[in-house]
Length: 102
Image (cartoon, rainbow, N blue to C red):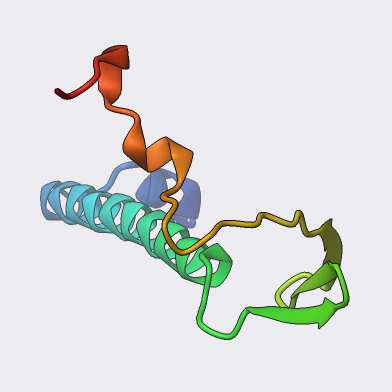
């Protein structure tokens, strides 16, 4: 008696198996998209500015800013700006378009 070829059975799936395979493929495709969206959300949450992320140190006229998330530091030179109590800042007093109020 000749033995059945197992390859011929594997190549010809039953009609119910084909529908089931399509459902599994659709489920896996949906799962893949959900995984990518979840990774994007987690990446956004990891890289956004967070409370306590930046630490500031004032040394005379310099300010040191340290980013705790990626261990970077910047030194910023402060500029002195002297205003008297009766004066207002220039940018706030000038109306848009260069028009003056009367």
